[in-house]
Image (cartoon, rainbow, N blue to C red; front, side, top):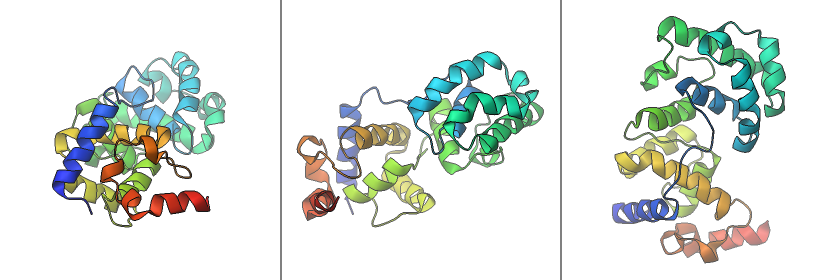
Length: 221
């Protein structure tokens, strides 16, 4: 495990390496981010960004989504995968937002988790990006891999346990930005099969690199 001093330095380096780190999903309204995140499950952000312009043009308001035919929504999001469940969740979510939240995405974990299709990862992203809530930790596949590899957590795979552990370690005001940085770093440098340790800004602080487990994993791949 890393010391708090090391954790702070890891955060500092990542924020310096990716100063413009933001959510890769394109949106203009709060509910558009919510729907985009739902579409991104088992799908790439790039694909979602290709789909949403036409989707949001066809249904330009939350009321339009609430009144939409689920099968029509499915046609717009088909290429995102799992389109039956995603379309149903989007329409039902629009209805709940209008009926219970005045058309606004709620700003509490408890209320967000009551929305159709919303889990902790989505809720934390919304809290961090829309409301800048300190301590918002988004645990996706990149975060799971890098948190373990760097040594921020010790062989944890369950997202909720990793979220809990990182919330105790990360500076609350930087946790959301850190998670965006982790995604960018995971894509650009520290990927699953062939991490580019030679250019990694965290190399001297990485437990996996120090122990040789990263290079071993790369050779096996």
